[in-house]
Length: 341
Ligand code: ADP
Ligand code: MG
Image (cartoon, rainbow, N blue to C red; front, top):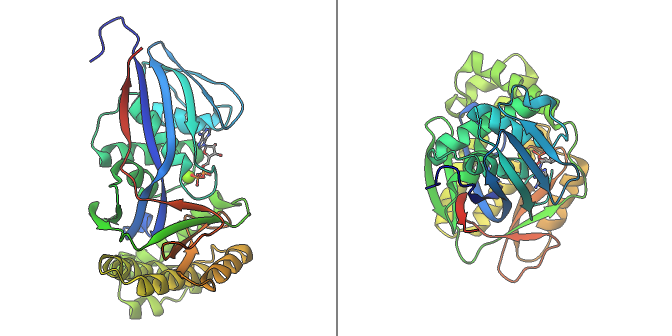
């Protein structure tokens, strides 16, 4: 509890996430299997006043916005749009003064944007359920960037369970934690390519999927024969990705639970090919990296992770394998830590 008139210091911590399998399915009501990771973003701040004033150790520029925020998409510095988006969605009128720290790579597919949003929501006092906070942060990202993103990143950050990946049904919002076996090590390797064109290409892909769904119904459960009959070749390929990816997520969750890393790895490779060929969100650099990693002893599979167009690959390996990247562990979701002055 905060005593009236006493400024309280708060620390809100939110993890990034890696998506093991199930990309470009969340916004079509499909299945995803991300896990929150041990790397994340923290906001340490004093609550009160009518503005948000934050500095980030990672990006230059003081963010200073008066509350309430009307139009987060025009805020400068631009990294502050994610923060302002959350303030706008929450209708925040009580501000924050403090700092943002993060050990996540930014703009690489580990959802530093969702971690920043979720940390902001908690720092501003959002005490909703993990799903409620995630929904508000998803809306904030959409308002901040104009990208019609799904809910996976924010929900993985709020609902993470240590030692587990999260099987999320984005139609029902049911979350089933799936234990990650001790014998599985998960690595994230950067392709060296900055992500490009993600915003407009993302919106295009989503519109193409919606075109297909208008004919065949919800893609995760549509009959493959009906998808194959779609006249529009682009909508057909996008729909085939979503439909087959949802099957792969389910099979992957079963394989992971059974400790069958060979099958899980093969499903990751199949997912990558589908994202490359049917969804067309891969790059030559990502394709080469997946091939190189899969050729290594002790690597069961690899695939691009996140929206694509550059950024990172996730690989599933035996313990003891060392890759040039980040070894990630499944972590708990976001939380608030009270700090005594
Ligand atoms: P990802 O979420 O995969 O890291 P995005 O492009 O969605 O990639 O989000 C990255 C953007 O989020 C950064 O360019 C920056 O604007 C903002 N951001 C994330 N974390 C921080 C941080 N700690 N400090 C400042 N800005 C951040
Ligand atoms: Mg992001």
